Picture 1 (cartoon, one colour):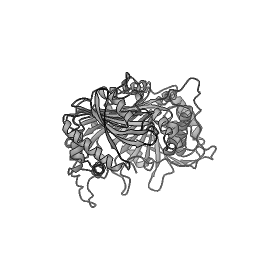
Picture 2: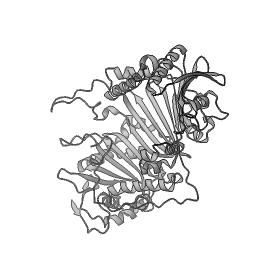
Picture 3: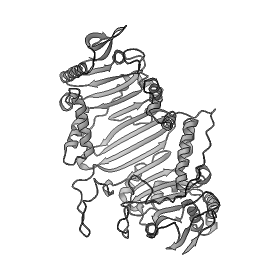
Picture 4: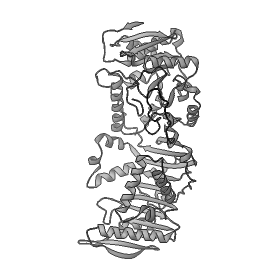
Length: 590
């Protein structure tokens, strides 16, 4: 074992100089590296899983080659904000590190693997260990990067050899913990300790890596056909995670552990984010355990978007809320209920109770058809100072129950409004409207709340007279013809049980006009990023009783040709820190 160090010549430090050394000493003969590029097929999540240990229970895969496609979207300010955040992140890993200059030329993909402890893990160690697999897409550029860093390391790196593989430890503690890495074939492998890296090397050489995990391979195959992938996350078995609701019950040392009373609600999940022609698309596929299977869900039609104005800024639509509510209550009151679900049920019931309504009897039982809520701009009426009004459409097979609930709601509103309300019957088109108005000084009165029936099955409810009129008498063009709506929905599945749409750009502009503007609600950084978005769409579907799929489509502002994207900022010098995979914060690792 040898220890190497050199005088500090630049602000590079910590683990990336060690990566440079590992690249140089791990590739064997120099001729092996010369003009030898790694193919794109070798930078996939499947390929990187082949160099992660057998104990891996979850994977997050980042395809860095897709980053370049994001330059076609956003504003100069938004791109500068994203690049600054990237620079800050890289600075935390190694001061002065720059993505465009130092990493982009050779890093093909990065995969994080979360793994359970190895057999030799000392007592008191973390419940999960993180391993990183970095695919080298251009070995010539990797050597160029590595050659510049090895002589500038500026920190102590311990070089050793294990099973014929050169290993480098960065500032290990007395127990051997610390960033430890090696180059094997087309990958740099990074672990949190020498023992963990040895375990990974053993599995790679014995071909007993995460690639042989059948559950993991099954989840990996679900997104194999995703076009232009950016980020992919795979959790093949949530029961393997040592979380409070899934971990075995505590047992004394030497005693066998008792499995949990019931399995977690979610059996497995797969999430992906990919680049599209209009922005980003995301998909979350959740597989449920058998006792949490869903009843058959009825697909929703495209009718809701045809009932709202073209300039609708927000629309949420679903079907058979009665069934959804019944199932939600059963889960929240069941033996295997989690506290968060019980709390959510209590909050919902309390909210309706404050309006004089019983959620279980008055609100949801009659909502057995399609229902939608939307918000859109208005320029008149009682709510014109806010610039927005809201309306609801709902389909029911029990008009009597719906009318009774609306009557109770009307009485609750009258009790809560500190001014006298007048009940008015009027007609909008062919629809009879029951409306409650309030006195307006200098004007007379204005409609605050009202409802009416299109037919025996479909009711409309609106806040303010303009809202009621807008959905009672649909304009010649509706939301379905809105280009922003079309852009996000075209990337989403047509078969769905519910969907949502948000015109983010217009919502932000609308927030600026109300008494409490967006600047008082959102941070300047968030406001900058929001300025790069156009609209967001989402769909929910269930292809099988044990599966739920959420799809998201985010349309971004196109980067105009007259604007020049800002240069990627270099990270400011920072105190040297060594990213230890076992201590770097992750959602599940300690």
